[in-house]
Length: 178
Image (tube, rainbow, N blue to C red; front, side, top):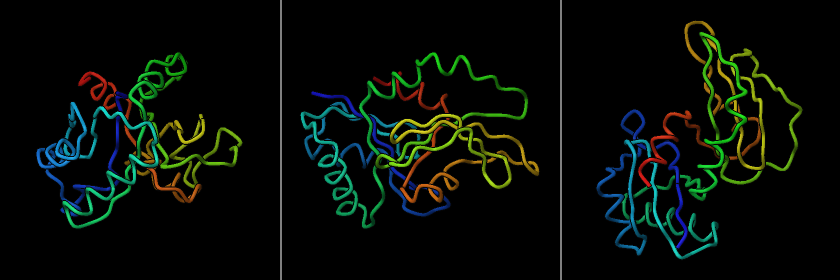
């Protein structure tokens, strides 16, 4: 059995694509996934599966959601060990944040094939991509006109790939659900 973390893109936002986490846990458990746990309402799910084909898992979960909730959403999947390695990476201790900056981790649905020349800034310079590895990117966001830049739309537009973004505190809390 492998432990996975899946992120559902764009659910429970502004009254759209509503999924109750209790119902989602029941659907996934009923489909044979084990030790299903969720963290907050934004579609963070942990589960165990004997299936090691990530494309098959993504396809299966996307179809379960469509059948159970009546809409499609992108499912972004990582092994628990991959999230754990990223959060515990010494890379993060090297990031120097000052007041007015935050950092985020963006998970792409699939690997982005083009290497980026880093650092890479958004048009308003409120998002700076500082790390890229396959389907994962780390960015620093700064205040711009009273709001922090949010990297998800910038990265999706840049890559053309569905993505979801989490802050490291959320990822640490997800890992504690083990």
